[in-house]
Length: 282
Ligand SMILES: C[S@@+](CC[C@H](N)C(=O)[O-])C[C@H]1O[C@@H](n2cnc3c(N)ncnc32)[C@H](O)[C@@H]1O
Image (cartoon, rainbow, N blue to C red; front, top):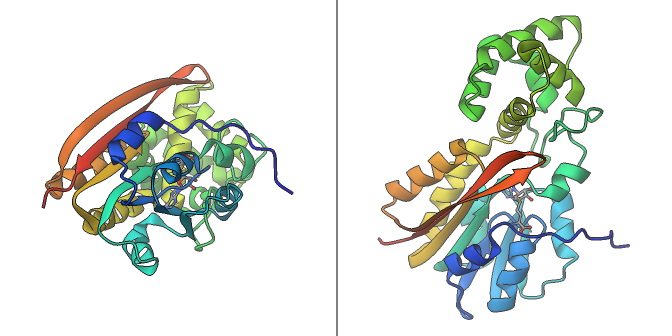
């Protein structure tokens, strides 16, 4: 039985479709299928598209849309070259990366992605490729490794203090669920701070899923399979990701034709999405 679908509004839909410069006969890839929001609209305008999605439950949600002209693959976009080749997608006209998690995953996977779900276990794995769970990392990493993770992935100014607190608290009790991590953060700040929760949870999720390395590999692979004149469209949600996007576009001599920052409210604090559209020149 189909689960009731929440109406999903894809981020920056109009700008993404314009950025991809869709042509009926063209060849397009959505590297982050998610709820299929962008993919569904792409599929209306082109003959054939390829969708990649790492999470199996999320992939099942796209399959429910029954997009007959879309080939779907469960996989990691780090392998985009291989996946495209497998399905005969070459000389691609446009590739989309809409990074992070979908709202549905945050709410339904129950893996401790969100600081708002105190009782959920700190798992944070997006697929079954054998990564360590978030709780394993918190219970095992040295203070220095925790510090590196929080400061590099989240640029959290109090990373050192939070790392110290994690190590101190786990001597008394292992980290299991979301509230355990919030307790350690609260001890450093003396009060609840949702911005810090958000940054630290994100840093941990990035570590569990190897997100920075996957993004670098995925973007490099995408540039290789784009045709000259093909478009790379990327939506990122924090500066660490955006810096990687910018670096890879520049390194490959791509021409940036759009940069747009869109601010939105997320439960009373402001967040932003950065869209970059670049064209392959050589
Ligand atoms: C923000 S959502 C995409 C939403 C989508 N554009 C839409 O309109 O419904 C990002 C999706 O990318 C998936 N994802 C994250 N990392 C991935 C990776 N390395 N390879 C493939 N998919 C990934 C997540 O599971 C999530 O479903």
